[in-house]
Amino acid sequence: MSKVLLLSKVLLKNAESIWGAKKGSGWKKLLLVLALVIGIIPMILGAVVFLSAMYDGLALIGQEGALLGLGFTVASLAIFIFGILYVLSVFYYSQDVEQLLPLPLRPAHILGAKFVVALCYEYLTALVLLGPLLVTYGVKSGGGIVYYLFAVLIFLAVPIVPLVMAALLVMLFMRFTNVGKSKERFRLISGLFAICLAVGFQMFVQRQSSGGVDSLEQLQQMIASQENALLNLVTQFFPAGRLAALALQDGGTLESLGFLAAFFLVVLASLVVFLVVGNSFYFAGVMGISEAAAKRKAIGKTAFQKLVKQRSRLLSYFWKEWKILWRTPAFLLNCTLSSLLIPILALLPVLARRDSGELLARLQASLQGEHAGAVSLAIAFAAILLLGALNSTSVTAISRDGQGFFYNKTLPILPQHLLLAKVMPGIILSMVGMLVLLAEAVWLLSLSGKFIFWAALCGIPGVIFINLIGIMVDLHLPKLVWSSEQEAVKQNFNPLFSLLFGLVTGGLVAVCVMYVEASLFATALGLFALFALLDVAIYRMLVVKGPKWLENIED
Image (cartoon, rainbow, N blue to C red; front, side, top):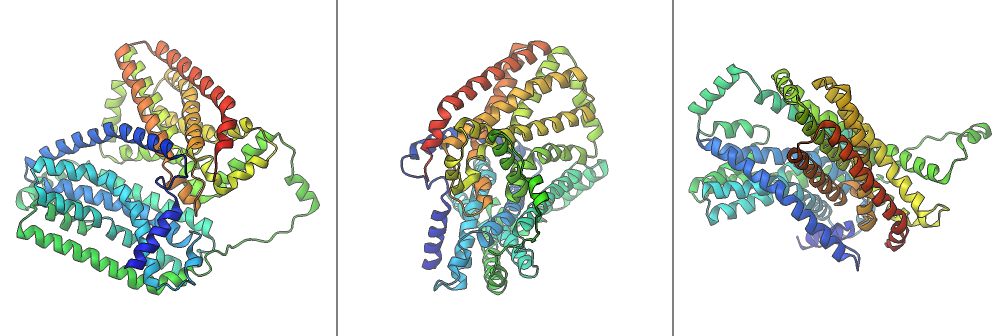
């Protein structure tokens, strides 16, 4: 056990997460983390209010335990989906795999240490999804010290079962297929599979929850005839969550202790299965994983001349960044495709509802009127800004270079042009996402051409603004040490800061427009002028101070 913990510590240290800052930059990261915490507080308060209202509603029918079951189910699903990507990154595509195999370590030590590393990443997901839920439920139910003790133990154990499921799925697939050597293709396929799984589950739940009168009557009969009926319903996908919810529902009783013991037996059994299966299949699937399949193709003189074209330095570097985004699966999934997928994924829950037509009709009616148009424009602008913030292309532009970033200092290109070339892909992709979002609005809500014109006009400086903010964040807090491309974008805190900035800015814009009560034209003109001026100011700052910031970046 001591070797597992020691190896886990070494692997986590090599990952160099946000707490592994280089000397002299700790105060910057501390300030950014503090800003992130302050910005998240309103989101946490909103979640607490929502969960409190849900608890009150469920308590009226004696089904408050369903809130815990729903929380554990959602968290388990998220952990399972992220777990597929984490297992691929930590177990297979990290650079330490083949260095660990010759060491005097037992297979269980390596498997256990890598599982601990992936589990630590999953605790961040669990903290966001389960933290507010457990605290809110404890306060509303009047839980004592036994409840909170049980809650801490269950919080530490909940991510284990879905992570084991993800690890077993990946290990079995890697063992009996030869796609491991085509690592880039497999990363892309696994990422798309995880996205499709999440969307399918969301649409299924949405479809079932928006059922008609018959299903509502059946649900009422089930609630009246069965104890914890809703809890059983929401935990059918992850039965272990039902045991955890029942252990917390009546904490301190002998029955709750029995449920807690049963839950930990399930967790322990899953770990045993993981070690047994991992010992049999993991090492056979990981051998030779560093090899890559490639096609050999001779290029003649004529074909070579067609490939070599003379371009400006700015355009050449931009084109290099653009190709890397599309050719690297981790960057393709998290940066490039997000501009297209996020607007579409946001639309699917609405279309999945059986009453989607009535819902869209009510929404369209609420957009009538001059002031309603101004408020709608502000909301559309905030959505465009948030969409740009969710695209992590610009905010990871420097981090994606890794140790190759220092090669940029030897290139014959001005630092200003280098920064501009790095931010241009993010701006273009965010513009594409904005157009997709506006096209959806035209299709579903039949918005006027004038409204769409003003929304697009305001959205252009907004998109540029959020991408310039992103490159500034990455300039001051780059993550250059990573063992796989997945870490550069998924295990990087910089996108969170960009998202925080987008949420705060978009929220302020919406609130200000609601209170000012300006016309649609005045609102559009004001937003365009304000953010155009901000763009010019930030760009001038990058031109003047950007070269110095680039020079100060150290390994």
